[in-house]
Amino acid sequence: MNAIQIKNITKSYKDVTALEDVSFSFEYGKIYGLLGRNGAGKSTLINIIANRIFPDRGEVFIDGIPARENTEVREKIYCMSEADLYDTSLRIKEIFKWSSRFYSGFDLERAFQIAEIFELNTDKRFKALSKGYQSISKLTVALALNMPYVIFDEPVLGLDANHREKFYDLLLKDYERNPRTIILATHLIEEVANLIEEVVLIDKGRVLLQETVEDLMGRGYCVSGSGDEVEAYCRDKNVIGWESLGNLKLAYILGSSGEISESGNLQFSNLNLQKLFVKLTEKGGN
Image (tube, rainbow, N blue to C red; front, top):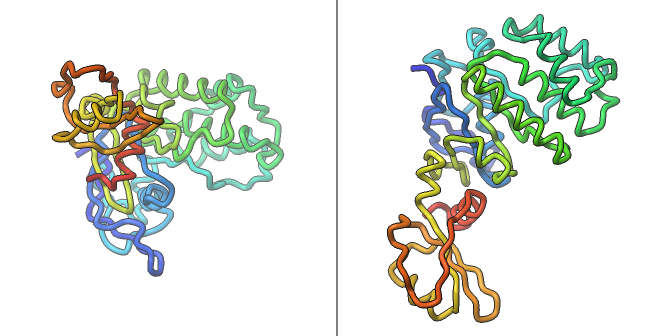
């Protein structure tokens, strides 16, 4: 099976369980959103997949190959994260050259092209760059790698809006040109909502759900109006959250849009991915 398979992964730090019996798969050829609040277990899971830390129990397989301390998977998966994997005194062009020596799938020419798009000065040393351009240099390496699985852990940290748009555009064009598995772990959910095909939502060390964005968006909607009318409408509905302003009330509901019907002065609207994420994690996924 061409996929990253996570099987029964458990990881604890002293008295804190970061991941508890987590099992699911990232299939080949999709763009995933790996979502979760701070402390949900996302970074721990990513570090386990990238072989930077090891689970207490369970195993990760890359295309059926056990990933733990296995050099066979080095050419299959790459993780871009906040961690600085290179000597920060190196110039960016030196980082590119070392990457081409370490990874056979690294496209050196493509890296310099991407650097030019971002106006990244490749003669500068990594440590001399701003936080935003340090992130850009890491993104450039990841985008220039021809690998089946690429993970971006908070990829736009420190980037301004213009640079974020450039990254999303480059990522989508690269995916269309060279389909593979892209995993985006980010807090900027609305920015990636139109990019990702499938969502994996983690909360308190467990997987709450794994669904396509299309199916997920069909699961919820909002209803607003006077407090009494909204509460009456919601009596037999699966409400995952409320908001109030004076006598006005808004309810977030899990259910198919087929439930929506004309009802007094109530107004209905779609539930966006960001709001759904917030409300599901507030409720713990129930």
